[in-house]
Amino acid sequence: MRILSVVLAMFFALILNAAEFSKMPSKGNSAELIQVGENKEWCPICGMKLPAYYKTNHAVKLSDGTSKQYCSIRCLAVDMPAIKDRLKEILVVAVDTDRLINVKDAFYIVGSSVPGTMSSVSKLGFSTKEAALEFQKEHGGELSDFDTVYNKANESLENDVEMVQKRKEKMIYPKGKKLYEVKCQEIDPMEFNLISELKAHITGKNLCKGLKGEEELQPIALYLWEVARFAHSSDRQIDVPKDAKCPVCGMFVAKYPKWAAYIKNEKGEFYFDGVKDMMKFIFNPKDYAHEPFEVLEARVTDYYTLEALDAKDAFYVVGSDVYGPMGNELIPFSKEANAKTFRDDHKGKQIVSFDEITPELVKTLD
Image (cartoon, rainbow, N blue to C red):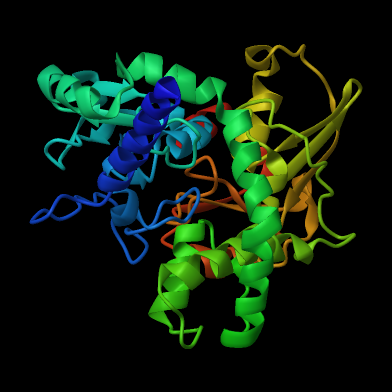
């Protein structure tokens, strides 16, 4: 009986410690957000409100001058294939100071009594070893560094994604669908490149009436982004298998139907999350463990209509302010007039044909 009492006491102590710890900024402090634009308060991967999970926030500064901020190291790991070629600096919010610091200077506590964000295991950064050890005394966990923690996040990524996905399918999507049908005007999720942009549009235009904050906005956004967005599929689009991975970056192509590209050669079929990666594969197949080949068929997705085009017949806008899953892109159109309109609306630098795309041009996009 005495042993049981001790165990119960320890159990309730862990619950109490977890409950007392808030992931929001400490009292008197504000969240440091380095993204810009109307969507800066939301994670670009999962759409969660960054200040609500501030103490697990991670962020990156990219070589093109842009910044991205994530609710967790898990969402950073999800986005890494898309940003690794442009990565300049990785940051984490230090729990003890509420400021963003370079991850190389951070001391992490992994697996404390504090619940994880988008993960079953929490990973928290601190500005000093002393602060990390002080936290450890109260909340448990192991002292670690960023490289070790990131590797763990990567190793558990598939399980973490599956865990979150099951909850979405069981609870979040149905709730979001119902709320959308009752409270919202018609919204086309295909107009946006990030879930955070979608959420900013909904709130900025007041498209859903009487929302109870993030409690209802997040389910609506997730339903639109992860369910309704794929209802646009038709026999005129590139039919991407659910498990198809881009051979260049490793991302699941089906998640980005607006940017899908495809080639067929004598060895099989390959899918890409953008024209840029498709061209990298065509120009330098050996870089991706493939022998040189002849392209038997190549298709890309028209930016406006989402219909599949023969890649050789398309017009491509280069250097616009619209980014694909892998950053700067070659954006395809079936008509030159549409390409010119897009170029003028989005600060494009030039329009090229398929034959004018060179390895040097593709390299400038990175």
